[in-house]
Amino acid sequence: MNMISTKNLKNLFLITLLSIFLLSCKAIKNLPGADARKYSYDEKERIKKNLEEGRGFKLNTKTLSGMGGGGTFDFASSNGLWRASLDIIDFMPLSSVNYSGGIIITDWYSENQSPNESIKISIRFLTNEVRSDALDIKIFNRKCLDNLLNCKFTQTDGVLVTELKKEILKKAAVYSEEEKNKKDKKN
Image (tube, rainbow, N blue to C red; front, side, top):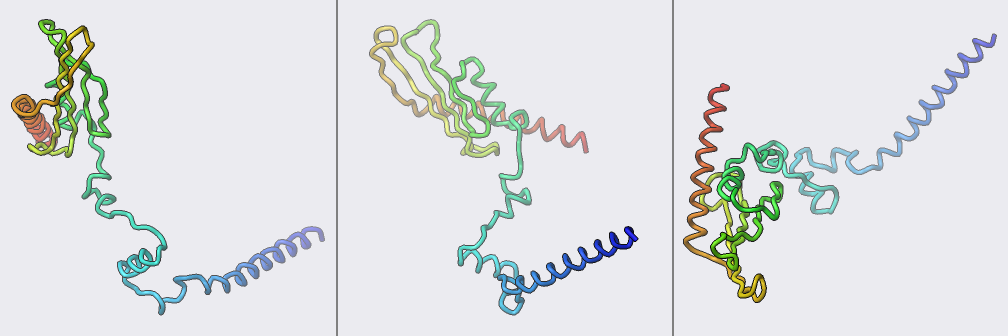
């Protein structure tokens, strides 16, 4: 007898849950999007309308599909420009290096012959592609009169920046070619 009452109790519980669920479904009818006659079947039109009304947000599908840059993560070892830049300025002490931020900043560097004169280099990466406008290089000069006192700071433009950029691009092109050859060998 006890088994029958437990079974009846379970059935009563399931019927109660089912009833509550079906009654709550009636309230769903009042939610936006429930009536297909009021909303377009075209996804782009619905997205546009929702954005205009301030509902929801839009993700950049190019980035999600890998066509943009945000979904692709290149590591420093596979980025030719990054490797070439570090190789070219490897004689200088580094102050700040941030791959994700795309910047390398050296510390002040001076030759033994002129301890009162030093340079600092900032390399900013504008793109990962090996091309002439991929780098923004700035070179700063510091000339001091009395052992790092009374210093004058200037920014150098011209030949040194051009030569540094040219050397980095040449080395990056070599690295890119090596990477391409490795991929060809794997295939």
